[in-house]
Amino acid sequence: MPTLTPEEMTAVRLSLRVALWATVASLAPGLLIAMLLSRAKFWGRSILNGIVFLPLVLPPVVTGFILLLLFGRRGPIGAFLADTFGIVFAFRWTGAALASAVMGFPLLVRAMQLSIDAVDRGLEDAASTLGAHPVWVFLTVTLPLMLPGIIAGTILSFARAMGEFGATITFVSNIPGETQTLPSAIYTFTQIPGGEPAAFRLTAIAVAVSMFALLVSEAIGRVVGRRIGVEA
Image (tube, rainbow, N blue to C red):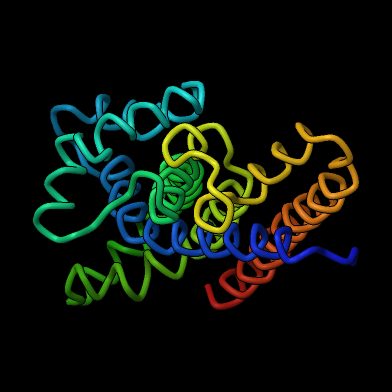
């Protein structure tokens, strides 16, 4: 592994922190929305589906600007959170986590939704026929069967959060030690004379982390899939 300067290490640690919090905060709402999109029939389902997956087709800069309008100091949500709870997102690392969560959320939901769609409804019906409560059916039948999708979506969302740049730099800027994540640091080093070696080192780390995440996702999904198949 290349030797990193303190500034580079700070960017790497901040990226890991941002990606971790973005992923953890997305899990519960991601599972809920995936269940709604997969199983529920309600007015506005198409609208919800469009909102969830909109970050995939919007330019990241546009997503970041929308976040700035909503969660900035003068935004309706940002002003309320700041005045009521003292929570500030704009130009803070928490804002970087929010932007990363928004950009990775569609990948998380999509993986979970596909996994839910693949669950055999007959197994759930059999458990209900035997008298199991719907919550118990979900925890003991549905959730274990969709576990590969949850794991894959979580890791992909984490990798996407690690690589987020456009929405993050638009929403929280590029402040060293506070909001300068790995992609922002790479961009900064490419803009200064003699910064190419540092940019190369950070790029190598970004590629390694992303590839590791993909390999782990595939391996865990395969293992869990085999285990579920054996138990079934």
